[in-house]
Length: 226
Figure 1 (cartoon, one colour):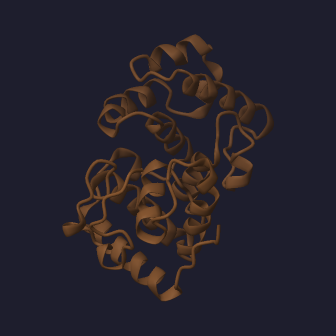
Figure 2 (cartoon, helix red, strand yellow; figure 1 turned 90 degrees about the horizontal axis):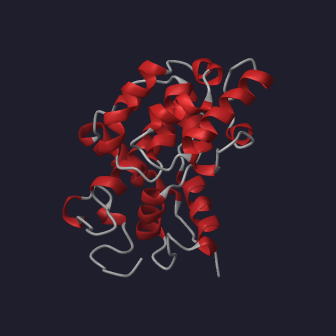
Figure 3 (tube, rainbow, N blue to C red; figure 1 turned 90 degrees about the vertical axis):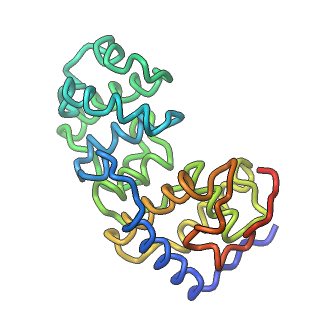
């Protein structure tokens, strides 16, 4: 299967329109007001397979109980699990506790900024590594979650299926191709991609009439199975 080709000018227009829309329409979420790596990590772990509204309920409460990664490391695992109760998918809490122990023992309690280094830590996959690197350290790091994969496939490569493991590599390639050159711009770009998939280009409804990047979308008004 040939790789998708993206015209640099089209990518630039896409980035600019997306960023402009996000600055106007992006939600005010607590983890977007911080660059603290630990707080970003907690938010990203909580957001895995959990709705934003649900995470908002638990986020500050968990951080009040465990304000730093060191507090997590020093606590018994059962205490961390108790504070996670109600969010479900408890492997995330176990991974956070294991990660805190490892970072404390091998990195003086400091999370690395590089996405590749972050991936070596317990429970950190490609998306979470890119998210922490981009959102906490403003590094130029691509990321692809469910929402981003859907947006990228619809806009740039309708033949790719966002849920197909076979197509994931190409979607990550597209994410890299359209990523801004600087880390600060990448922060806005990545947040905006996720927001577009959450609010406009959703799995159930494609709101093409109000989409900021619909003019260059290759699947505008086309309904197809995911």
